Image (cartoon, rainbow, N blue to C red; front, side, top):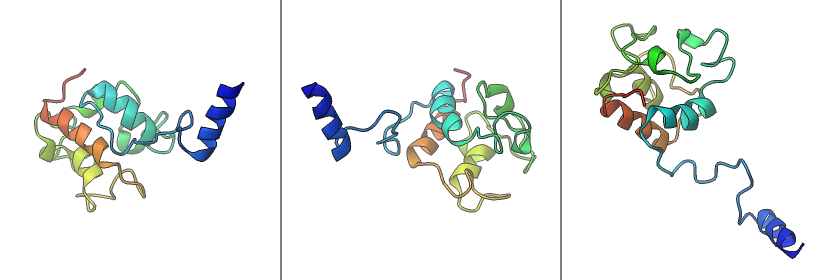
Length: 135
């Protein structure tokens, strides 16, 4: 009983993050692996029903796992001269340009009105730079 009261007191005081809280999310490194990117970034920031989730995803690009076949070496529908993900070429990858540039080549920065944290962008950049393996 004392332990429950102490834990509850700490939660109320904000000293222990509540379950499901993504405290520290913006600074903790995310491994540059597709499976980590799918679960820590795409699932939490991109796969809403009106965006890149099930049904009819924006630009025909579903980010519901597994994503390798819909992303890697596939031309972007907005800028067909660029691949969504160009393995080994972060600067030539449209998805990275779309999430990291305040003024992307077409449309608006993604996700709209809520840019991704730097650690998330760096995980995607690292994965692409490593050749975008299907891991």
